Image (cartoon, rainbow, N blue to C red; front, side, top):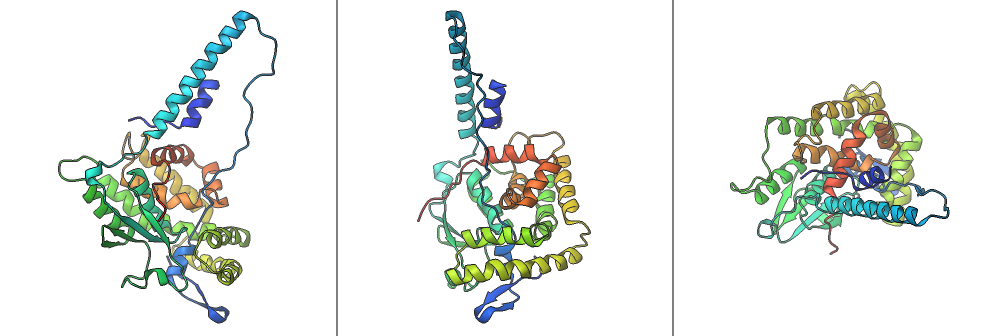
Length: 331
């Protein structure tokens, strides 16, 4: 099925490194899970102003009125067709292959958690979310695995984002199905996401004090924090991660963090080689991995800069359309 951006169609018709945790007593300690929560984030919504595309009102002749009515009908039809295509963009799994109960233990801003959510959303697998407090992690005390994401699938615990996706893919794709068919190219780029792209995010979202505060404003607003933890994390966390990001630049041999992010975006677009998605006419697991990792930063300054200064924007818009609305259900 060909994916098109519904809004664009209507317009055309018209015309992990060092990590910190904030413990009692304002003592800053290293902690991997808190860094994962603080890695990057976004409000998930783009803001756009509404503009009228209609000309000023003028008195119409009868013939002009007919023409306007026809034009309006054509416009409505084009818009309706776009909405239908957009609604069908997901690749829902047949009911007999869908897990019955899926629960994701996550940090909202964690890139690895967002990878898993991109997969669940695209395949329209219904899931519940448990937001984990990164300081006391009481929500996952029951598990021997003390990181996120943790995905419970019909009572089975799955951990590590790439492993989770691999196991889910097998569950929804038996030998007779063609839902998931990973090839060498797909494996290569999934590895690139985990071993390269994700390491560029922290140096970019904590590049300056203002960007660090922007990131922690989202993290504390959407994460599972008490009031006191929110205040401490926002300001102490932003300051700590600003300095940590500088160490991460050195660790991963990053000279210019923005240039490195732009280069990665262009590298990905080159890999598409003119295709809508790496998977061709439909996203594959590599598309979903890149999209999931980038989704939380899309409307932060770093993400906006990336879209403005590289060619990745069109692919990202197609992915937004393909993945569609969240498949999350309320507990």
